[in-house]
Image 1: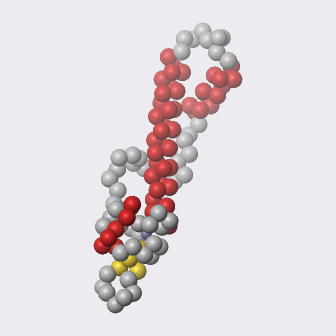
Image 2: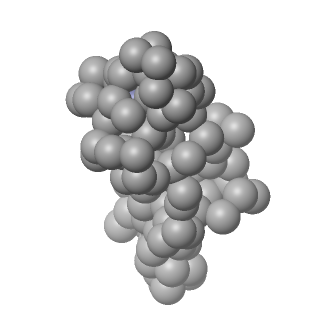
Image 3: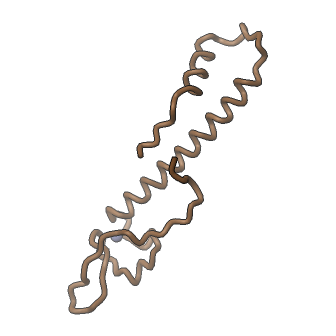
Length: 109
Ligand SMILES: [Zn+2]
């Protein structure tokens, strides 16, 4: 699995193009903000920038995956702490818990 959460990320791999005014400086190909102004900070791109949106979507996906793994861990803890005798538990719920614990989280990678 790829590293998730807390990994320091450098947002410098976006496509750039010359600023086109004869200067030597470059700008983001999508939102046209100068590279010098962006300075590696994702939020310096325009909100509608394709690169920024892609990176934000990845961040969200990683956060959701991390949360999913945490919830599975908690569910496993709860499930394995249950007493052997559990006819008080709705069989459908028990079935659902087992299925959730056995299924692999979809990472989309
Ligand atoms: Zn951009």
